[in-house]
Length: 371
Ligand SMILES: Nc1ncnc2c1ncn2[C@@H]1O[C@H](COP(=O)(O)OP(=O)(O)OP(=O)(O)O)[C@@H](O)[C@H]1O
Ligand SMILES: [Mg+2]
Image 1 (cartoon, rainbow, N blue to C red):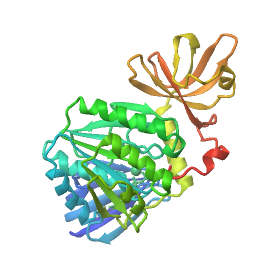
Image 2 (cartoon, protein in one colour):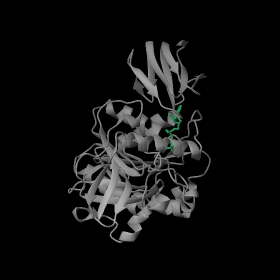
Image 3 (tube, rainbow, N blue to C red):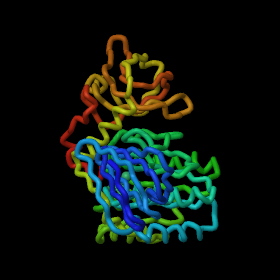
Image 4 (cartoon, rainbow, N blue to C red):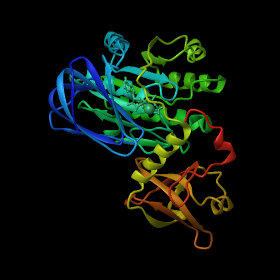
């Protein structure tokens, strides 16, 4: 389908869809779209194509996809203004922590900041701390990547390293999530970036959430905390983060919210992506180091379907797997995984998947917030 859009408007495209710009000047989250470049919008995602100069599009829509034209730029002006705060930071790296509830536009805001900073040839690292809706590593991990080009989606980045937390929300494993964030930051600092952008999860309301974000801020030591607030949901957190520099930016009204079921479905698509062509591999327990030392063997018997993280001897993240069996006689672990290297360290998660890689709900996990 061909579509012409006038200067100053935005074409909002809801996936699954693909879009190519045939003529004119178009930007997605501050990234210029080359003519002929095909941009794929995944299911349950929306991308805004801002038309800086009258443009012709070639749009292909999948099932339940949609396209809508709106006036103006859906990227709030305050997103651009917040760049000045980052630029004012004199030390290197400047660390920014992005907070906001689920579906507040955190990932898109990070993408926008990257696109604006990359143009000035800065060395930029991004930590993705959103366990439930991870963009960079597999679900249930904290991952980081360095970025050297503009992008329409954070999802297109490949993780350089990841830390397996094993839960879809930090509310289930706050200590482990803080440990992961600390380790990722330490590794990144050794690589001397100019900017570190940290995306966080959507668990922002309630005392536990506020305490968790405070703990994160204490280990990340952000020069600025960038807060996407819709009403006043972040106020208790902002009060707790009193010693940090903070700024509020607008919540974009064009955000497309996704319900819990959609978010779970998106995660399941992501497990499948990281377990593509997975095979069951068997490793003797004696050759492995199980991170959860207190995991007693009879617990392993009940562990079928448990999501695991695999690392090499240097604690380099290799990928995820699913425990398919513990052979108590031979003392071997059988794990479904696409990882080809031999793992040395295995970390057991709290998530369990069925044979179709769908999350198995547990009573505990049903009330998990912010995943
Ligand atoms: N300024 C904007 N204009 C149009 N669409 C937007 C804008 N910001 C975000 N969106 C769209 O709204 C949806 C939700 O935004 P995004 O994924 O950035 O939010 P999030 O806070 O990271 O969500 P999550 O809690 O799932 O991680 C996405 O499909 C995104 O592309
Ligand atoms: Mg996100």
